[in-house]
Length: 287
Image 1 (tube, helix red, strand yellow):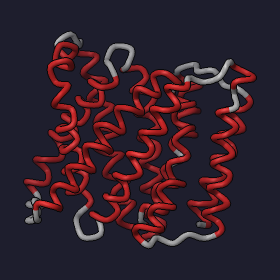
Image 2 (spheres, one colour):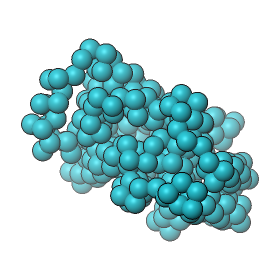
Image 3 (cartoon, one colour):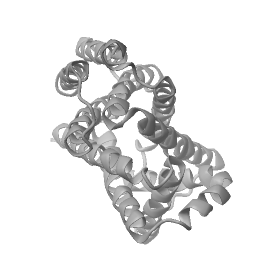
């Protein structure tokens, strides 16, 4: 029962993140990726911090525990998400999200060696299909003039940072409530943006009410609801299962981007989506 619920929660998180990607692309027509990312962390912290105080969840931990939490929040939410948004602005929603399908493979391997999570033939088979899907997408040059190399680099670096942050989260949630870890990591992410605050403040002052409303919706869906669903899923089925399942996000985001943002769809993008879907299905169901 816990396994099925964990998978359902992971799929739910994936959908909220897919929708958030599309809305973020729209928002970045008026807001820079750095400012958008910082604002959503501030908004989400305004929800999470009062909640954990009300629930009396503030833990009594040593300094090292708090250092790890803050480090995880900064690299995962502030730096990692910022770099991904920058990459998505250059590549488009569909292609940036499809490149993130490499993320579960990195996570699975490191979780196996660092946390003792199991690996089996189905996980390797699914991972192989996902790698093939990414290579196919990167070979799009012959059809569409290629994809932005800087955008690819930004997304790949973001994936590496997410992986480190997720492994830390996997370790943390083994003994703590998921809502507490989500609240502390998201709030910690704000610290990573403080050096850029003067620059962001000049931009924030120029935002209209509608711009802020869209940022609020993005924060609610992606950072509040989506993150809680994902962390709760990890606590039920571990990051080895939850992360691959949430990698259905790129497929959902690609479809939404084609429909609502009119992003260009190519035969290689479609083939990449299909291979990724099969790989994710194998990992999530059989793995």
